Length: 105
Image (cartoon, rainbow, N blue to C red; front, side):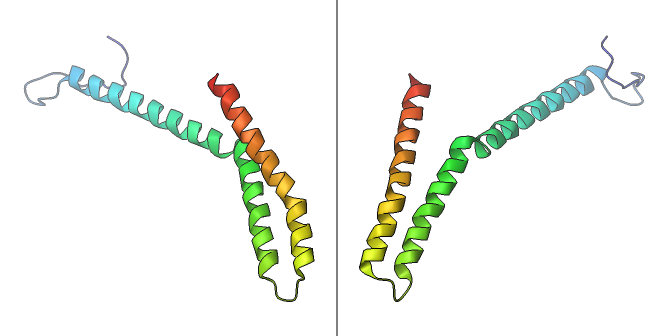
């Protein structure tokens, strides 16, 4: 019998079955492995380069809207600012679409 760390005598007084405890321990071990694997995959996706690029792009877009809401800024300055940040946004969108097609194909 495999070592489980449990040495309980099987007597009618305890009513404990070693095999039942072993099955429960195996279930808990497998459940813990699956939980750790699931969390690891989520952390990997959360801290991936694609996610950070996505966050930077969102921050750049938000900065454009904040710049538009500031009073006293000329429309020409707003247009120049969007002309500056729009290539960054479209570059990320192209990268994300190209990366998605590459990983699927």
